[in-house]
Amino acid sequence: MNHRQKRLSVSLLAIAGLLSVAPIQAASAQTAPDLGAASYFAALGGAGVTCTTGGVVGLVGSGLEAVTSITGFPPTSSLCTLVGEVLYAPDTDVAHANFGTAYDLLADDTGAFACPSADDAYNLPASLDGLTLPPGVYCIGGAVTTTVGTLSGPLTLDGPADGVWIFKANSLTTTFGGSVVMAGGGRACNVYWQTDTAATFADTSFLGTILAGSSISLANSSLDGRALAGTESVTLDTSSITISTPGCASTKKECEASLKQDKKDFEAMQKAEKEAASPFASKEAKKDFEDEQKADKKAFDEQQKAAKEQCRTLPH
Image 1: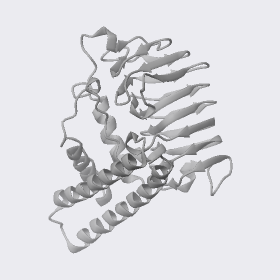
Image 2 (image 1 turned 30 degrees about the horizontal axis):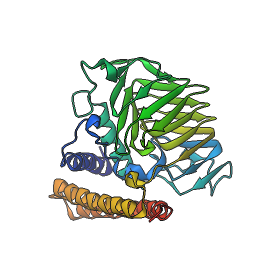
Image 3 (image 1 turned 60 degrees about the horizontal axis):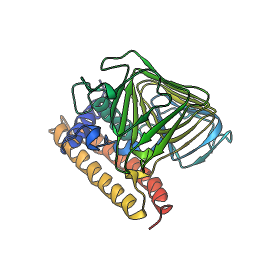
Image 4 (image 1 turned 90 degrees about the vertical axis):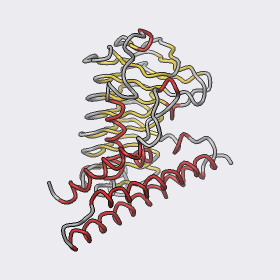
């Protein structure tokens, strides 16, 4: 394990500590997972992002350093439109680490987002067609599942503006006619989908933040939310992604307050990293660590700058 890998391991522990400062309750208590810097990305893929036709509003990021890991977007291509920026590792390291922490929290079936053990209303069948669901943690196929969640019709999420919906499945597949509709004041920015493996969308109008263990693929589909893929790529074919506003904000003031809190959390994370890494084996090791923290801060500042542009589009 090299120095940077060691430091990223420290980052994960530090971020996990930050997320555990405030008690995390079940989604039925209307608590959402903290995405950290990953919340700034409309599309973030461990192995990159590929777009052949369509567009993205928000940041696009790759977990790899290779510029070839992101294709289809300006400035290297005009296949797809982009209102935002393209970022690569190491500029995406913090966001990818934050994604990993949030993903692990959601996937943990013994923690705050565990599948209900007795309430059948929250253990869903494979098909989500025609269901109307209040806020809560839902497991597709039961607590321990190899079930593929499917959607080929409307799914209605009915609840208040601060209601949180979390769906967990082995994988997720949607086909022609599939759609997710909010009702009762519910908001797309409070919907989360965690899959152990892939999420595949075809001819679908979907919403929410998707945290997939492997890949995310959209064909002839639209996503109001985020596509965050762990080990593989996010792929768009005649599809669009429009990112939810930071902090699920509906006003400029709320949005800016969310960014301010994110900055405090980031600074606390870097402080925890330094404390965990000390004492350093040598002056060279200390300098390397400080240089990497400066690079992470620069990347974080760039991401906040892009997010502030989103805040400016909101009403006062």
